[in-house]
Image (tube, rainbow, N blue to C red; front, side, top):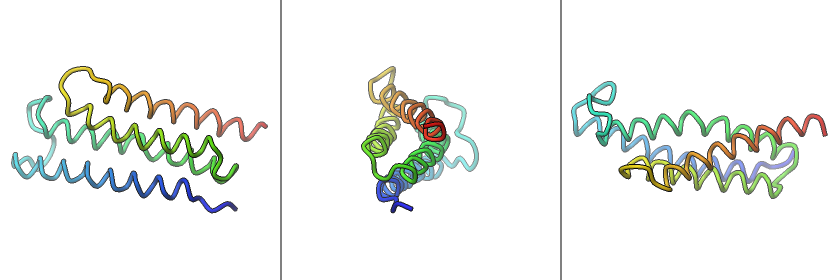
Length: 131
């Protein structure tokens, strides 16, 4: 078995990003005295923090699992490194874009980057079985 250096590094960096996103939710809840939910305003900083945190939690685990599976199969290949780098950059960009009013390249880039990692990682994982 290959040491999973790329996946381990990416997981550590993404874990730190998740801590920051979690802190933003906690601070938002504390400042608004909102114990559950996100309040009534879908444009509030708390709503944005909650959705940024949830979006990360929805996509990152499966993306990391795909990257890890590819790294186990192929080692620290260029594909594994590129997917990990795109995922990290996308997950930094997305919450920046969420906090920026209106459509913007950070939010779009974060979404597209994440979906790209999910799609390419999924196809590569399936292809590994048949090739």
